[in-house]
Length: 255
Length: 342
View 1 (tube, each protein chain N blue to C red):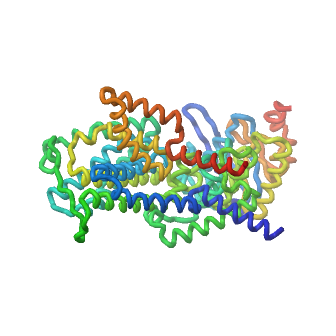
View 2: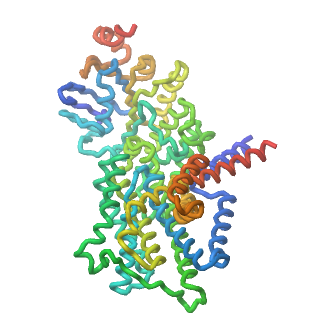
């Protein structure tokens, strides 16, 4: 039970194109695992399999020892898999506070009728959500913007809102899809420290998909490298950095 | 320092509660009280015919709220709400005419029937988005009048002739006219339905509806069963419009297939847009628009009433791009800002 997530020989075909070709790796519990690779390597495809938007053509994905391939996408949050999105996917007309409350949607089960009648248990549930959301806003330093619609906020702030929203479901595994995109160097460093702090405070596991090398190398304990849909290397950041195939496929073309 | 930051924090919390519509400010409370008092006094100030017209304002206000829940808060289009309105109206008419039910029993029946009908229509509509959903619902509204004329249903629906129903008297020996009584009855139903809608939209379900509107993929990743929520929203929306249809039938005392054409769907849509999309109080303004704008257009020019109507719509869109309710809110915000500045 040391691995929270096990990717077993996963392949994905789109028509005749092989997007993923027998990829396997384990994500150790409580760690930060970085998944890197050049554009088109299959990172996002794999990510979408993990959040159940794509169905693998073959292979299996186990979360907490159980397959997730029969779990519908909307149940993933409840079993403990939270995520953020590559190009920010906030609910732009809702306030920051409401965005975070939506994040905790799966933690309660009130229905339409009891909401329309505002039954006592709905009131209690709303009070609980309110408290939980404010605690997260304080944790991520967002209280000042709590009542503003998410749409008009600075990019970096929106990223923190997305993080707060993902944490509201109290995930065991947090999937981060290219969180550093669009940020400057300083902001990326800050974000990296924040991820480490969150991992320690909330005792969760982080799977980071990123092509921003410095972020992945700085905070990951384990790194998996994809290229053309195959895993070409796996190990500590130092091991991966020294791997000739990685240098050739990834760093070689970049530097 | 500690005390100060605590008080700013609680102020922020109040602001946030207001911004999300979960709580009402003192101003909003006084606005609601003033509107309710005005609504209660209205029949005493105007003629019976005007009172009847205001009853229709409330009826259409409920129908617009129904569409608003679907379109304004959940992001699903519908050009088919005349069908749900018709189902509600015919439910009331047939229950009263054939089985001699009291008028008030027809409302829950119309609500439940339309809830089921809306939910069932919402299920296949899940596969359709945007303009395609608009087309599918258009098909529904275009087919409805012909279904109502269908020979084998004539025993209940009265075919082309429709059904005439009797206007209810005021109960408990109240000495008020039938029109006034119906107005008050509709008014109470309206308040109840608006209160429930506000509750529905400010809590967990409402946030989920709005989340689906803003970003369906993210909503699903947050654990919202988007398919179920969208179909249920269709059902609730149809319920509101169906109850409005039943109230409308009781007020007009008559239902006929050609009162429920596609044009009624468009009228409800126009009411929603001009009243204020995604706004609960805006829906009542939508009712006012539906009842009084055609009247106004006819006053401007009897020969070219529709041209006047069209011109009025364009003027509304130009001067109130956020609808009447948005216009009122913006105006108020500008006023308070100016007062603060001086």
